[in-house]
Image (cartoon, rainbow, N blue to C red; front, side, top):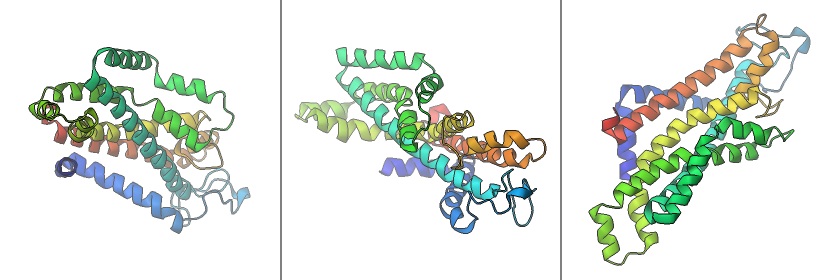
Length: 279
């Protein structure tokens, strides 16, 4: 835990990391508390009025169905961040497990797992998701999280495996094995804690990737289904009024850009803190 705290503290001291962390904090607070103070994102108080420009009553304006865009953008942040965090956690867990097993046991187990990973990396992740999601008419959110998480651990496993191969030759690991420590003890008490840094970096950078991936799938109609608000779905809905009401697509698009940029800024700062050679 001390190593994790030190890594976050070092990332916070980085100006770019501090900006990214503050923006992510603001977005997360808005996603959690915003719906308590904003109108119902599904409400259509005056559907005949159509799209209204940004003003005092609606700071982000309304869409073609007279729904408040600020409320929908904030609610969409809750959806996007929730999916991103859960999917990134699943990917990190699977990647860590495969990397630890492959790196520590080596031999035929390592060869088989790494060939599996190589084969999976050869197929574009988006293609796999499109192939699976195309057969479902309505994709549950839980299934979407599982699919995104289960297709994003391949690079993480290679990262963890490389770290384990290095750590396996260290004196403290050899000493633990010489003293009769069980393999489970060596893996969970010595190897896993020393791979937390790279895992945190991968998870942080993976959040931005998942947000973009979920927004893209929703824009294609394969992600979060209407009327539930999602940033990609809002941009899809805004296609009809992009000329007459551009704010309907600009604000959710800005939300995606700012969130992904913030996650990448903090992830880069965290990577520099964990491995100064990457700076």
